Structures are given as structure tokens and as C-alpha cells.
Image (cartoon, rainbow, N blue to C red; front, top):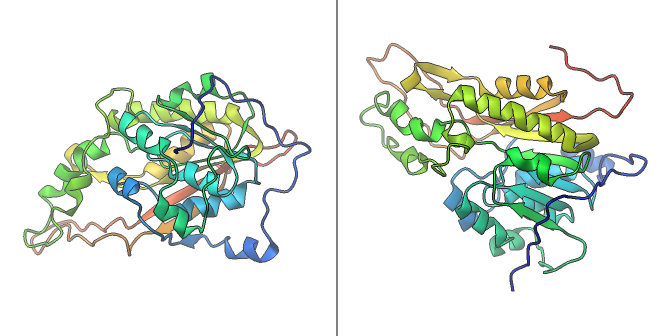
Length: 313
């Protein structure tokens, strides 16, 4: 039987007592996991294929191990099909997730895909008292109503990119080399997840940034001292708006810092082996565009009271 998912109006306060060490890693593991440029591989379960933009389990495994202990609370405000929550369960962390799409929410409720369980050699334990999964089919702008202050130890998420999915196929159709065999490869993914105006993926860049600003503020309140806030962000182009490069990761940093988050690290996720190269031009082109084959993983931290860590800019 599938696990019964309980949904609560509030999460209880869960501050770590006496603020122990950050994680459960050995010294060797600490070094091995500290590379600033990484690739993340692993099986692509059917539910992540259905989503189209879910990150690999190995990415979630990496950051959950680094920034949490067993029994901690992990949050994903843009849960999608539940990758972060699945890895949290495998690693014996508790999880709370928000997802505005009913379709993806229902997929996430099903829990760990058998292919993923085999990858981690994990025997799923239904109704385990050691793990709590709390899911909400609503906007993450409601998280202040659902999560008590200073409850969350780690947020790990990949946000939607404004109205990118509505425009990206059209953006480069005219700029793609006519004989390029990959010309239409991206179009299957270029569709909005919902038609709801409150869906970040349907908002203009200005409205999107205003929404991210609000979420960053709520996350700060919900996060325990010494907690981390990790966002996987990919820059993009919007040629229909005459924007050759949208430096989204820098904007996310600004909005996080505005809400008192201290930038701790930036990791580059090298995705060049996972993406087809597309010739964005040709012999007569007057501009050259690089294929964006990487994402930035932005790591922010909430100071412990009395700490003096701050942002440089």
C-alpha cells in the first residue's frame, strides 16, 4: 500500500538543541563532497520524465547530506514530482513540500519510484515513525501559514523560470540553423505547467522577481539558525523580449540577500553531457550565442544570533 501522507496546518518548532555539528559526514566525505564544479547522474525515473525539469536524485543526495542531520526538516517550495522529498526519506530526514500543479502533486504523493529505491538500495518502510512527509497542493507563498518559525533546516529547490516555458521554443526558432538535427528537441518541454496566474511559471519577469522576494522572506522566518537555503538556477535567453541573456542567478542572489540570507557558496552543475548542442545561428549570423550547458547551485545560510557573517555586496 502507498504511504498515507498526513497534511497539517502547522509544522511544530524543531530547532536543533545546542546547535550540534552541521552534518553526519566523515572527514573523507567532507572533502569528496566539496568540489565546486560537479556533474550529477543517476536513473531518470518515469515521474521525472513526466516533469521534464526535475534534477537528479544524486544532486539532492549531495546537498541533503552536506547540510542536514538525520531527523532534520527539509523543505522544497517548488516540489514538482517530489525528488527532494524522496531523497529526504531515503536519508531519514523529514520533508515538507509545496506544489501548485495538481498533476505533479499527485505524482509526488506516490512516494519513491522503484527505480530510485533500487539505485539507493533502499527498502521503503511504509508508515515509518522515523519519517514525516507533509505535502501541500498550493502556492509556496502560503508557507508562512503552514510552517512555524525556525523549523526548517534546509530548503533545496529549483524554481520555475517566470514565463520562460511559454516562450523558449519560439525564442530560438528563427535563430536555429535550418539543417540542425536538434532543431525541435526542446519543444516537447516548452509548455507551462499550469494556467494559474499565481504560478510563478506564468508571471512576467517583474512579477516573478516580486514573488521570489516574498518567498525568500518567508523562508528566512521558517528556517532555524544555521540553516541553509539552496536554489538550483539556470540562466536563459528570451529573444522575443529582445533579451539575449537573462542573468537569473544573480537576480536570485540579490533577492535572497535583500531578505537577510548570506551567500555561502556557488556550485556549478556541469550539464554538457546531458544536453544536445544546438547551433544557434549559421554562416550569415551576426551574433554568436553559447549553449547554456550549466546551472548554478546557490547556497545561502541564516546566521546564528551573534554571528557577523555578511554579504560583500
